[in-house]
Image (cartoon, rainbow, N blue to C red; front, side, top):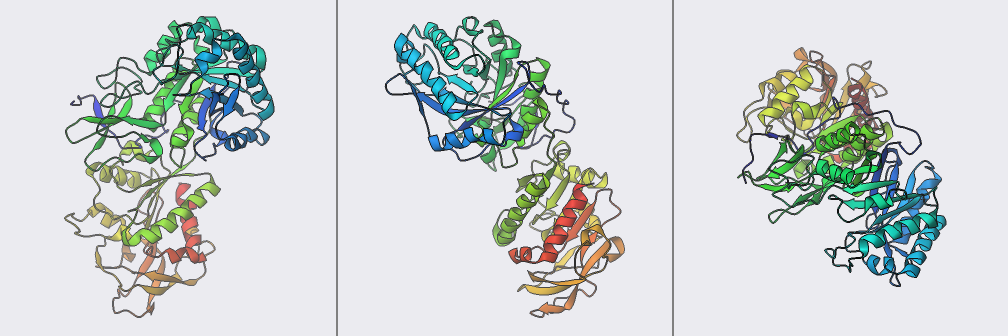
Length: 571
């Protein structure tokens, strides 16, 4: 299929929380407080961050083989999740029983004694593990689509089951359920007195080329969407304050492309990410415009959260927590919108991801993640500049150009980055490869970037690598706080340029070319290696070195790096 004019180009993570609708002030308790429900699975080892959720549903428990009790998948992990109560007493934790392909519900619910025994065992599990409740995920009463048994009596028996579980666990415990998007399998009006809230599975509603979780109908969605799912539940008798809208932390493909968790999603080189502004969701399309996958990103998740607030729903749910990226981009978006958790300051890191700079990059990313954890920042890693737009960069306090050259950038990224620096939208820390300025690989000189770096172009470098002694020239600059007057840095290429950048920048340190070990004839004379450009509104620092992972063994280097980040992040 071809995409229409309502599709706008968008990068993989292209969205920021800046400028989004402000989160409502969260209620602290009571039945009308907003909830963020995360499904946490038995088959991963990812531990959820209690800061970004109010409720955890552990997936899964099952009806046991004798139809009269509860079996729990990976009990050791379940106990770890349940033990989160010890340090997070406000967190609500429930066992979700069921899931796609989880059977024996029909037989259990159709027999009074088995159903009562199962309900009693739910109460036993709640008591034994110190849970806050039970979530029933019977997919779906009256249907055998999941390869499980079913009966025409399932709908009525589901109501009896919910009443029995409520009677067994008591009024002070949670009883929730996962509901199909169309609300067609459950007699909701009959169970409203027993139900705390329903988690709408507003995803898996289609395969590519249709988006499986569009917010509103468009030519790229099936008839049913998130908005339609909410309306179906309202029509079925579920009030808005008992509706929790589900969102997918994964993409769903079709015949030509497999689905992927958001955190592992890779856009093939031959494809692009576009945004359906009517359905309010991103899609991956090939060179012919055919949709290969529909997924959710920060922009679409934020829009769904706004929908929840605008329609006074109880809250948000997502499947599943481990599908997010390492920075919890989606989970933090949900938390910020729904329960008012402050957004973490974000750091964008551009790197090549391999090649001759791979060892340095890998060590640098380890160091950066540790630094970010200590500072309470989030890190996003990009290996090409394609997603960068002006809106994209709004979400980042600073950009680290780790080993990424000033060419291969698309025009939109060039324009966005120049504005980001010129107008002081955020900070910048560059290393090594950022001054590989000139005519390379068919790309012309980026004149603005050359001026940014002091009106220089690249001429040569030292090979083999050499150690060099660096002398601090501006000891009072914040980047040089706590840095010794001189220090040795190992194994670098020590770029030289057509001219020294000194007349156009503020030099913080330079290298003594006579100190090179082994000695080298490749010299520049006056050789600055750390500088800032005060003519730009953005705080910026350039480090000419950045080739060897051994740099992270040098305290002077890590001190400068941390100082540079602290200074630029606090723009």
